[in-house]
Length: 126
Image (cartoon, rainbow, N blue to C red):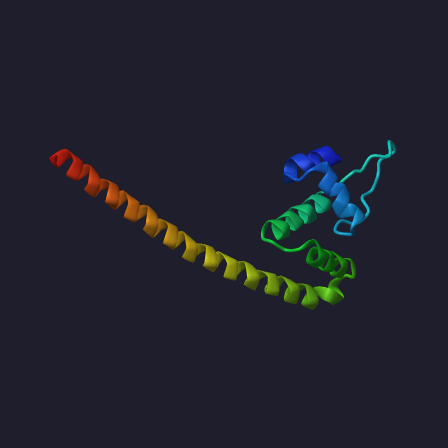
């Protein structure tokens, strides 16, 4: 697959794909006879995982750690698991805080709705 196809399938720019390759998040991508990058299905799967890590707030530095450990093979599975568990915990904590904030917003919206109902009722009585 071409870089454009991967970009379309993952929603990340061709610039970001090149950046990820340059910074070791993606291994050096094979090139066709025309010199253009040719991504494999495995590359696509890995890039989609990187997108999930980034979307959930993992830093580029942490993503590089995961990618470096992955390149070292099965001997690093435990280290990768530990890194991902730590990230998972951080994401869970952020979600909890977001839910708490959403409850406050919901309460304020309900307060305003009730206020509007009461004031509209008073206006009709005048």
